[in-house]
Length: 164
Image (cartoon, rainbow, N blue to C red; front, side):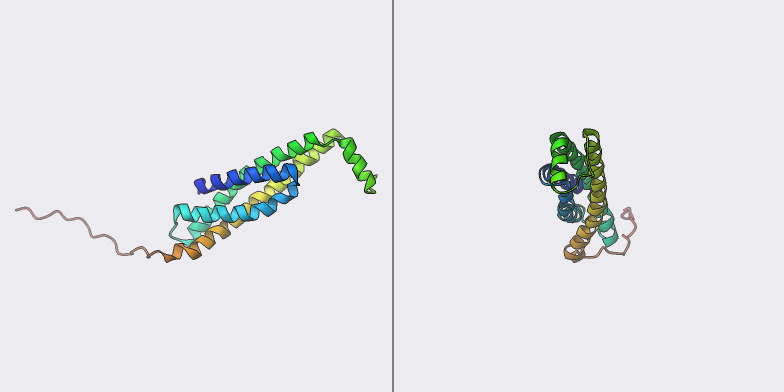
């Protein structure tokens, strides 16, 4: 679970940072769909749990671990956006679009960027954990139930060989 969470988390960090800083922070939940499924599937593949419920619990934890990395990437991307956007230029763009009621200064821009990044990041944690369950369930339905069942017969007690 930790190994799969760290792998998916590294992927999510890079993609959240890249998409959040270049395109839009709102794009990261679309990425989280695929990374959450990957985290759950990798958890099942690495740990091979015997029960479906164990697979789903571990998939949720792997997704949540990846979600922590998503929040970090989202906040770094928000800081990059806030430092690179000029509030005066943004206000001019808003007024050209017909919105003269919103005027932002530097502090408000930072607050909105970091607050929005945090909110989207928390949404990503929930999404990644939920889809980690789905990914683990997919793994269990494809691979997990193909294994032979564990024997319910307890092993015979040890008895020393007879002395001669």
